Length: 498
Image 1 (cartoon, rainbow, N blue to C red):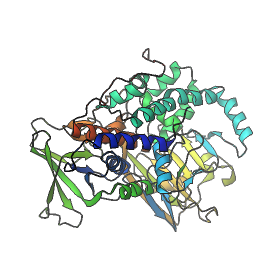
Image 2 (cartoon, rainbow, N blue to C red):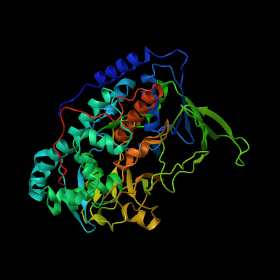
Image 3 (tube, rainbow, N blue to C red):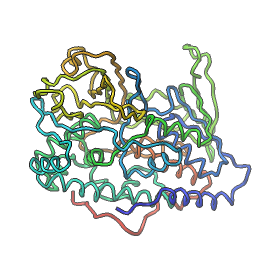
Image 4 (tube, rainbow, N blue to C red):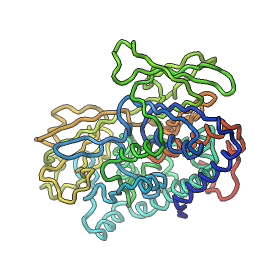
């Protein structure tokens, strides 16, 4: 895959910004209100600061902690990643951010052996020796294990490379579907069939799909091979070699971006967005309760903005922000969100539950391959502080789709010295087909998290943030030639026959 140097991407972005800003009045300072200080909101603030050349006032509203779904939890004396955990080596934005912020990368975040559990036994496990692992993979899955890497490269990673190119040159798109079409036309088609049917059509075996692909989806999204092909493809990229995370916790990236953006952090809960003026451009009012306000709402405060960006999931039954005085209704994405529960247990797992003789025979990461198994995965965790010395009391993380009861916990870890349960609405509930929403909710009001209907991942959030920043920037100055422009040049293989 052709790799673009991240520095080149940002240099091109800065050049475009300079050329357009050079013709703008010094008095034009847009006011931007961003709701949510996760990776999407903080990266949007960073990109806007670059594009406007510093001539922008940005507020970011956050009711909890900076980082959003990127968070660490303390278990015993160490901290562990509780939200988004792993990053792909081809994720150029996240690579560039860590380099720019001077953060270290842990390139071996989940060391040890991998196993697949079908409810009765470990049906497959890797070895500490690569040649043995390779032999075992080919013995059980044949050429599927080789073909999936080239399949992911051709159908996902090459499309990401194309995306980085057109975002570097400033192209922006109004809808998620338009963005995917610009990347590779077949990606839209992937959203119209399940990953199971897609891979079967491309010649992958039932065993590989039911075990390997199912295990990847269970750990990455808590869901099954019935999800649409686009998110299923991204999930398969998430089990490739070379994955990494940030030493000290992935939340250090949005924390660093907040500082680099120069944005003003407002700790409080946004209650409503209203249309103060429907002129051109419009003016919005954000009402919010400061973090230390009383519960009766007497301390409600308001601020006005030219641009509003929702960097938080605006989905059915999930968002409690009201939209006031709009001539047309502002409706959330009509899709449910998926509950993920991460339970951290400091103790030793029960080897006999998995029908192995001893803990030495138990893989350090276990993925489940059946929907009726009560847990999705069990992983021996590394602290975020990158200690090389193993802990005397290991910490295991169990992913489930519900809050586990004590009996379920004791089946896997009979005794523990510390336990933490973190549950959050992690990503959309995916079906075999997807309706791709728009990034634009109203004139100069945007929803970064619309991109999660295609696939939820850290890099996808940054992609959505960059696209929204470009949309807001061009529309503010009336430069529409870079929006929804038909792109020419190299395209991926057309998969419209799917």
